[in-house]
Image (cartoon, rainbow, N blue to C red; front, side, top):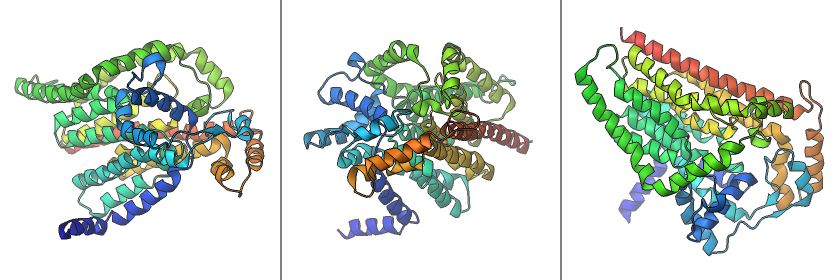
Length: 462
């Protein structure tokens, strides 16, 4: 008992102890707030199949990779057994108000169910913050910087909104990407591959980061010198990384193959920009989204060239850089950010979570990375506010309290929604385009700073 007490006292006395307590309490308040109905309905239907022993991909019931269901299954099963169901019903006054972009739930959901539903997010969010803290400790000598990095991540307003109000599960992807980067830095290549493989089972994007990294690991220090000894050593490293990636995919092979087939036949051929959270940057205006939909086939074709483009870039990295484990960190962030330019659908704001942890880590060694980190965070947060105005976040007050009625909320939101714009029909469309443009600037700045950092590291070695 004394030993357990001593351990607990040590945790509370840790420099992160107070920040963790405040951050967790803040998240517990936000978790019961509301959720975007598309994500919860799609995941809920797949889980209902899963909990009853059926295939979650039968009859196109699911749009998420299989590991998502195994991560959510224990708590969902607990909620299901004790009667904490989804229990939603629409508030009629809000239906027409929120239908123009679908970004905020138009249904009342059991708050306790929402807390259970989002509890895995809290766990992986905390793990990501702790990982960032220890990653920064590996990179810098200044003892104040790791705590600062944890603070920047754990109290990032965009992360809080997209994860605990919107209910996006992209935190899973973010955790596995930064975990993979950490193991690459530590030169634990099997564990790095394992991390990217597990991340691919929560959303397929990590595999498009792992593939060019595998090329870099195979050819680093070989191109230009034809060093056979290096090639043999690199082959072993490549083998460890590749096996690590493949092991999780093989473990879930039947379900994962079903998922990929579902994506190919059911969704990839029906991609279109329909509004809501797909309105990021140039699709914020209906006329522009119409033009994008006319050329959606071209966007998919460009995406098909992504592996070839990454291969060429990877070879160039290997030819002109003498790669160290620190440079591998920059290269991992490079390919993570590059994928935003090649997605076959318009970039959704929650996808920014994939790169944010890496930018926090990089800001510990290069202060300039705080700029794209700030642009991404501010743009994503402001974008959500711009969709229906800040007053839409009073929505739970209309559901659970007498402080605000649905009629008052509808009136305020509709007044905001109908404000005339300058470059578009409505002000909200102008604002979405503006903040989406700021996010796009963050993408360009990130790529520029990563290339500059790699070039500076190259010159330092001379």
